[in-house]
Image (cartoon, rainbow, N blue to C red):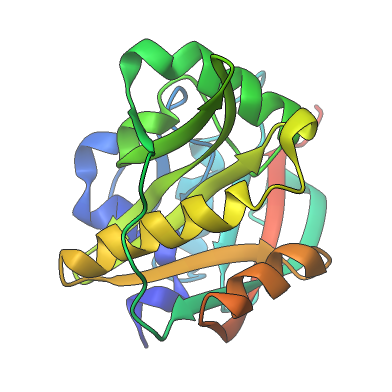
Length: 224
């Protein structure tokens, strides 16, 4: 089985400082991201995962190729399918793009909250290199890196403010992030909801191909 089949688990195993838990189940720290994972669906692992989601916690996201089993004590508030895509052609580096960092964190969070590219929290931007495009001083669009493990880095957080859509900004940024990953000798991959046909078409135009369907579930503690 490829680590791409369980990218959340692979990322949390290789970047231990981002998460909490143990060898049975891990989740990202609450201000970094909302993904959680187990190495398999063994009963002990599922119980450990449930213990990482306490009453009052935000829901956690699971994303993996194998079917998802909801742990006892948790409920799925959303279940859907996504696609996992990998880059198959070399892309050129971008120009006139701004590297984003801590000074831009509030604007990044506001843009992601407005456009909902996926879970994005106050410190999600620390998971990798993020770049953006400013227009008239406003952060118009951004994209960056999220999950990573040896040989692979995920393109994520791709979003454009509604005021600036239709200008090809997402394409420029997605290509630039992918090119930077490739420059380091790593494989770029990404995820998209199957219903997001516009995003899938964009990534296909950049040379990404679908590797697998991904099961996604949003879980929270069952009400007592």
